[in-house]
Image (cartoon, rainbow, N blue to C red; front, side):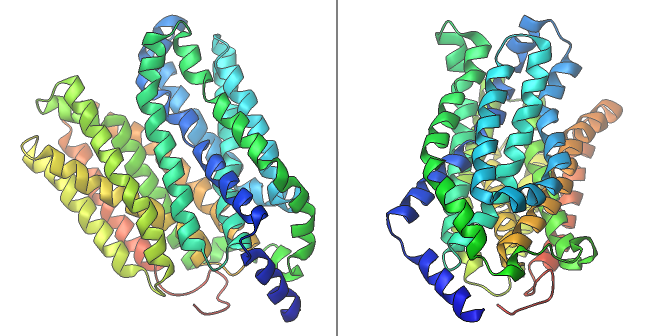
Length: 409
């Protein structure tokens, strides 16, 4: 068995033509995991006005995918173990393309049904990409995680920036601004096609111990540490993305300035989503990284709370660095804390299920606290408290070990 596993790993580490096709496929799949979501926020007002729906219903458009993530993520490993990870990702890309077309059809029922399909499809990519990396690039996990994290975040930033220009400068309206991302998913489908031939072979080649469903991760303290770290960093990201412009406008910035500050925060995230996975992969223990990330969160959110807009670009850069680093580290935990690709998929499913449920709660709670208190101060204090809990969960997740307690780094 050990000899077979060694031969399998050697084959997968050989960067032949098929390896480069796989890398390009991973980059394109990663690019489809955020662009269909971040393209919505900037044009939610014209979408709302055109369909004649209230703010509460329009806001639900951004929440549906997060709820779909929470619902579908635990089921993904079961589906992929039946059909193979490559084939499952191909099917999810097709489903994502259908969802984008339906969402852009221009009617309320199609808007919500298409949005739900988009959330279901993206759930598969969220969960399976870390497992694909552990399966195919076991000695290059940090580098590959950094590459796909950057691809995901660049596409997210481009989508949020291009939505309004497409809306305003073309004749296709909000439907075109949301539907154009089907071009990206279509390209991803074509590039991923060669991997379908590998799916059956890979399932046969993985040692049988890898294909077994791990004993319940829900009883693993490390798994819960990873889950809470993933969930709380997602909560901070989605809450900040949803409400930061409003907070800054209340402190004296105009709408344009507030929007640029959010863009600055997103740009500051990008280098860290690439660098942190590489650094984390070279360390046995990631708790120091966790401590630095949380310190940056506390400085960034504390600066927004106490300093207002005097040094706001500095607070944006610091908060963005913390957000990019925490995302990159969360993605790495799925592979660092597991022994096999199937375990990585199971942990990813568990963490992203609960994580995105927390993420869906965050923006709602942030807004409710503002409505109740009439100020953003209490809401920002909650982000500081959440940052402290990130520290507690991260110290557990970052400690050298495995969710099933087997093997050593």
